[in-house]
Length: 251
Image (cartoon, rainbow, N blue to C red; front, side, top):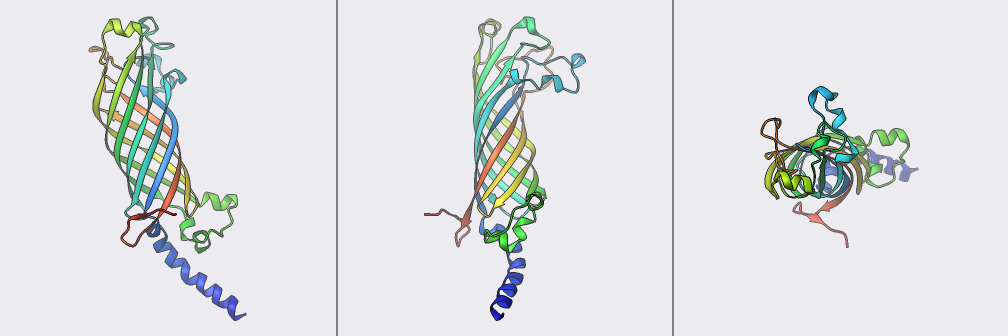
């Protein structure tokens, strides 16, 4: 009986401690993701009078893929920063658009690096649980729903890109590639699966400072720089922090 009372008291005392300290014990996180990339350039797409709020430009023909890796540091429970690297392909084609007769097409290979700040406007309740910290919490559907984080992010970055044109675009003249700054922004959600592992989905856009990601621009009809989006499915592994706050890898 005394032993049971001792255990109960220990759990009750540990709950407020875990609420304040769990995220501090795992400040560092490593992350990997993969998903489709969607490009909005000067090749392809529909004119405004033939479009419905831009929805007709959401086409699998303009879709390729990206992969990314990140290192995150948790400054506070609701504020994080991460160093993000992405690579993949962007595709643009005039097929099934407003300029089919132009017959332009380009495939862009890219590598991007970003420094991103995250703000969590909804935080999970799982990290407040002592049983969750010890890996003993049951995970019914209701518990899973209370284990979700929702966040918004923005930052600054840059992209190296190389353009591969079709023969028609070569006759028009094109830019082969280069480097430009980008501004990332978007939203995401994360499932806090256990003390060491998260799963998430993130939708992020990139505003670029160039109009040549597809190698082509039109001086009359191009009204804005190029934009592209990622929809990534993410796995996050949380590292225990050492005595000085540095990440500590398990042996």
